[in-house]
Amino acid sequence: MPHPGGTLIDPVAQYAHYNAIGTGLPQLGLSVTGGFVYRGSAIPGLQGKYVFGDYGAVSGPTNGRLMGLEETAPGSGVFTLTEALPLIDGNPILGHRILTLGEDADGELYVGTKTTGGVQELDGGLPAGGLFKIVAAVPGIATNTTLEPFKDNSIFYETPDNSNGAGDRLFVGNTANGDPRRGLLAFNLSGIVPGAVINTTSFVMRVEFGFETTPMSLHRLLADWGEGLSDSSSTGGQGTTADPPDATWNERLFGAEPWLEAGGDFKPTASGTTTVGTSGAFTWASGANSQMNVDVQRWVSDPDANFGWILLGDEVNLKTAKRFYSKDMSTASLRPKLTLNYTPHSAPAPPPFQTWLATHYPANLQGQWVDPDGDEDGDGIKNQIEYAYGFSPQSYDVVDNFSISQVAGPAASTDLTVTFRRDESATDLTYLLQVSSNLIDWTTIARSTAGGVATGENGGTINSDATLIGTIHLVSVTTNLAAGTNGKKFVRLKVDRQP
Ligand SMILES: [Ca+2]
Ligand SMILES: [Ca+2]
Ligand SMILES: [Ca+2]
Figure (tube, helix red, strand yellow):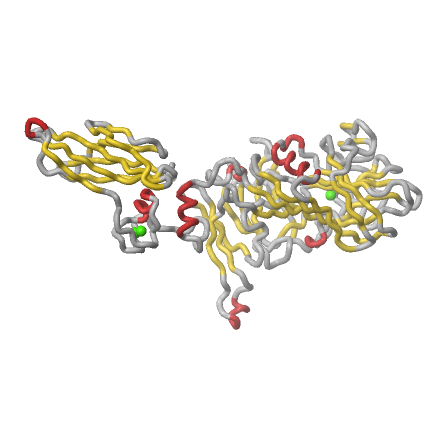
């Protein structure tokens, strides 16, 4: 970045190649694809973040990953790198490499990708790819996301000032001497908007080495804790001198804050238990009503209470300790993985127009364009009016229930009566019945807003607004055209939709 003084300032954030060991940097990706500060409205959790891509990131060079960078506190000059943005259809974007990001006038973001390696793939045809809009998860439709811990650490009973914050292994369970070690793991759930319902929770950790097959339990932590730069190496099962803000056996933030109880402050009742063998992947899984699910639900609803889990082994018998891979492991597939199935903020029903589109255009992807002025079924009723009438845009409708009649009124006046159809479930529409003498100046004589009963104005009188069938109403409106004003008249129904 250019500096006002004309020089460059240091990078505000850095990471290393996913296979570059020993740099002291998190090994997150392959190549940065520049992006934008998100100024859109569709995904509140992204606002103010610098969203960028990695060409082919942590889970293998063919999978691009969206990344986020935000200032920890405004003006602090300290930036937090977010490895994963939980988005619909997943992140990383499996099988796609990120080539470019774009932004529209509303501040919403787009990602350009390709699926294969480029020119060397020409034998098999040109690489596939596409331009995708980043959209919010659809309310009411369940989706999956997989997260790695954003911090993890080990604490050691017999070396209470030791830790292993940056180490690529976690040590949990009893040693041959009966000295327990415990694992701490926390997850950044900020991409899931509060109000979401967590349906299922599954947590996988991978063991590199152990002596015995024993049960191991996750307990919800009750206080925050730190992960510093201490690194006792892959076989350093005693840890090494803690580096603030590392957690230790006695202190949740080394040199600053003790635990209330040595060994960590956590719920005595386990949230989940599984039997862990001496090598391979082991899963703590839970259904809807289990305590692990309740924990994650709590963390989503109350981020200030999200301190993660402590992993405890068998601390009665000897040699129950396991050497797990931590989130700092260079090989991404070996890191801990939390997979959630959740239903985004289910309270508001999907917008009625989205429901109508999903009913009549089931093959269309979310966000795919449908022309509101189109008339695919050739019945002369444009798509937006098909929606307003509760019709199908793909079947020919014979009667559109729009009619005009006139009878002589008193003193050479004319009573003009118009009927139109409205769908009370189309709460995103405003129906305006309008008259004009010149096709330029239009006067509204009746309106219905947000599914409400029609009201008259400017001399329009509602005769009836009665149910025709289901949610469809037929509205009858009369206006009196006084002598001298009752020449040629045009009538139209104007339908506006709020996005
Ligand atoms: Ca760690
Ligand atoms: Ca039509
Ligand atoms: Ca139709």
